[in-house]
Amino acid sequence: MLVYLICYGISFLLARRHLYVPSGLLLIGAAVWLYMRDYLCTKNLIHLRGLFCLAFVGGQGVSCFKLSRLQTDWQTETWVCFLLGTAAFWLAFEGMERRKAGGVRGSADEGEAASLGEAKSGGKMPEQEHAGTVPKRPGAGGNYPRRLLIAMAGVTGLAWAAFLFEAFWLGFVPLFSYGVPHAYSYFHVTGVHYFTVSSVLVPSMAVVYGAMLRRRGGNLQKSRGFWAAVVLAALSLALPVLCVSRFQLIMAAGMALFTFISINEAIRLRYVLLLAAFMIPAYLGLTVMRSHSVSYLNGIFEMKNSATPIFITQPYMYIANNYDNFNCLVEGLEEYAWGRRMLFPLWAFTGLKFVAPFLVNFPLFVTKEELTTVTLFYDAYYDFGLAGMILFGAVLGVICCFLVRRREREHSMAEHLVYAQIAMYMALSFFTTWFSNPTTWFYLGMTGAVCWYVGRGGKYAGER
Image 1 (cartoon, rainbow, N blue to C red):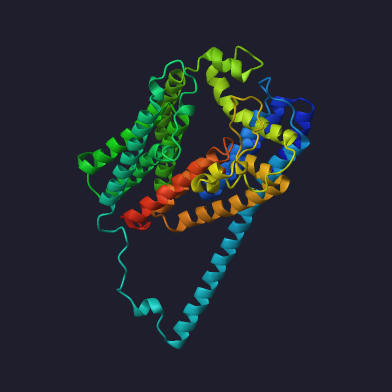
Image 2 (cartoon, rainbow, N blue to C red):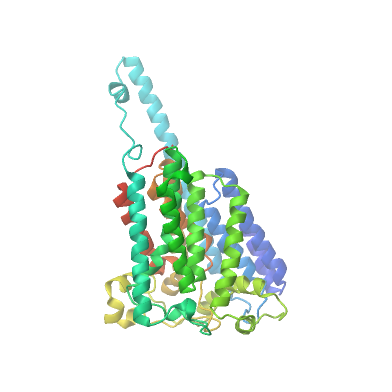
């Protein structure tokens, strides 16, 4: 953290002197340092704190380059906000980590003392009294894979039914709506679209299903269930394509990859390269199908160098402009929302947003109308200002530490699926206010329902 603080202070001073590229490079270096620190300590590629620091601090560094005319020098308060949010997350995580480590050591010492006492007295330990009575592991037998396959089929069926209803009700399919750049933005039926986008969960479930079969032994290629899972995953991936949603496609592929890493705890580089080889053309293809021409995008992004290739411009702006949108919020916000922004999922799921519109009607402070993505902390500041940044960062750090520790101990299906989702949110922390989004909670609820049906989150065969 000390390295980050030093780099952050120097980056701030460089930015004030309009030395934007060195300022950004310094923050990117700090982000890589923070990520590598957690990775080297844990050997966990998707360590939640490491992913958050790499994405959020690294994204801030990218934004510091100021390659677009839409970007301006940030307010000092904006710099302070980013610093406090990151520091609160990191320190809360560290505090919980040290507290848990101390508790584990204390428990071990107490257990050792108790063992010595029992040995001296000649008494039996509880585990000696029940020697040979080893409880059967919940996933060591039974029909867990079959029930997971049924759950995958159910989620896929619900998603397709919802999609077909939306297509019928709205009278169009985004993929076939040529010349309409924002066709997907209009492809929403209230309440139904949650089920359509739940298709992004199926590839992750397919990864877990494959792990279940593999750890039970046998040839996956000869398993009818394995090929059924592949078909269900393919059907689920087809929905983001039909909706022309690059975001959903990235979510589905990213969560599946993170689930794979969580299960295997190691991944070879060729798997990452294969995923990239699939994702890049798919992403570019969906860009074309959304009628987003190069001239259209360049007109929106307003790059200082008009010759910048679109494959650099587009990802740059989808990262960089989010921090400038936050700066717009700092500059333009006149009064806090006092929790109403972050409670939007409650207003949405209960329908109160239709009964009391004042609960959700707030101006959106952005650099340009078309560029509406924001950072993870946008609503926290909107609600409580600097205090919101600190509180939200600290709470998120504690939760992430809990998930990391639980995954290290349990390794159940629920841990893998939930951990992969949260890891995806941390890896895209520069993108949007995940936990103020009802879809995030719908995903988590759907995952919980699947785990309950399959076996209340029971462990599957062959795990440690």
